[in-house]
Image (cartoon, rainbow, N blue to C red; front, side, top):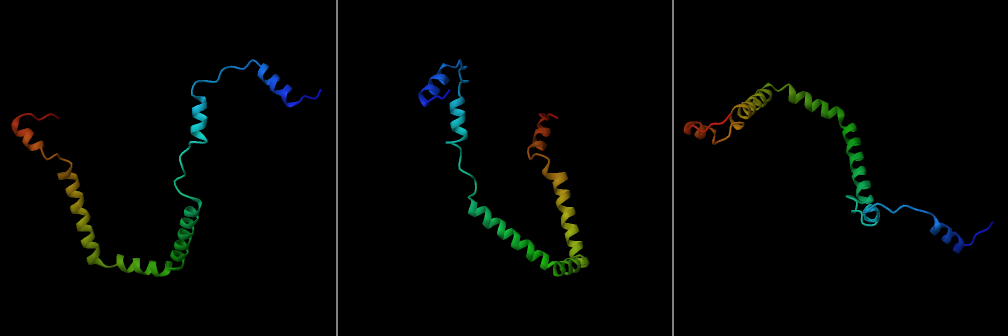
Length: 115
């Protein structure tokens, strides 16, 4: 049995199909036709990947010089002492001053302190 296009259309229309859920048409359009533009174009992705690959190769080629520089820096005791002092001061300020709200002392003095 060979059907032409009109017979196929009539057969499909005669099938007992359920109604589509509400909002299905809008969801399909939002996912296909109205979808947002991609964040980066293909050319931007290729350019970024090329630049990153070139930087990795430079880092691999410069690894011995970078290692020598890091070793020289870490053997400088004055630099390490200053860095340690700065880290200790920053930690002290973070733990013991910044975490307290500025108005806490005035609230305690007025008797409105709430834990």
